[in-house]
Image (cartoon, rainbow, N blue to C red; front, side, top):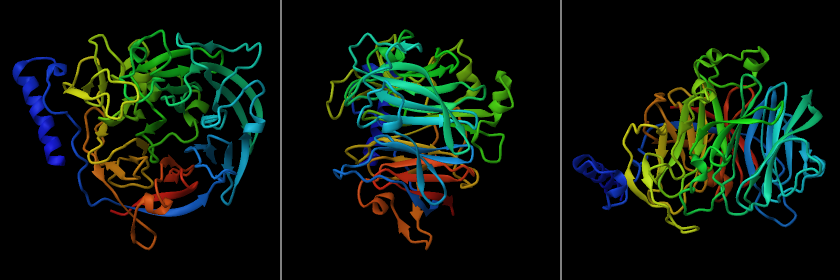
Length: 454
């Protein structure tokens, strides 16, 4: 089956090059990414702890990737609370009951995400209300959406929160839509915030991800001083995780905002720092995009990753052009052509993979760690199956092959994330405060450290 898919992609590309026509005009077989290749990569998984996830009604928990803020590992239960891991147990920092006054929290994504430095932490809530008489910016949408992603700035003193201040609110769609929510703090104290296209499955995102007057489908640079934002990049579907990679450091990751504490505000201070963005696909390509932090901060040129309807009427998913699609249709929007590589005006992904034989696929990760990995440059996976993948090359300016990874226990017995979770695992990859790689299984709240053996 995979050989047929690969042959279809090659045939489609040959036709495009031969007739010189736009890829969207090529009917033929559906283009797909190159299959994930077999490899001898082996990663050991070791149990670290478990966070509280029990629900009175027995419902499945809704967790996000843990976050390292200075020496603290922060665990996120999107329905219930933010916890600090003490090394033995999880103690709550923010709960639904202690959320800011004036918010009416959504049940599934009440606390969408967290990011921070040793100086400050940012918490993104999902609420159907904003505080009465709010003095911070509230960015609305032309659509009659009923909810908001409300951003607050917290100050951590020791292991407790001592100050809370609202920053901004972004109108969002609730229900079966892509809200994104990836966050990362910048060297100058500002915040990177990714917001999804706010559309249901089955469509190409519409025009909003490509429009400068809309916050959806964008990577925003938010200034916590006044709640203003700039658009750093456009063309995203559902980016739930951002990862800053510092290739100059031995840990290959900005862990505690030390650049910000040093007061390095110039773009030159970002040389060697990269931003990785995982974007959950529709039916064609799950992708990881990597862009230099300098390019992100230089907003005179807004980076375009292709999702949403562009000026030529087509959306891009991975390295493919896709049709407009049909809302909630299971196999849409379909790929209708292979995009040129490179394609002027668009950023191509660092890595991508497709459905292959699976019914559903959704990318999760990546995690980058020199302390845990030797030849692996980025580790990521699939939420539904729990399959684990990796790249072993670090050329951020081209598409890199994706390889299968074998997991083994501490006794070196082969295992899988679905085996450890007893079913669908929904893995959430992250970095511990000491720079080691980890993964949390959303199904159980159990989290592990990861180490490459081969």
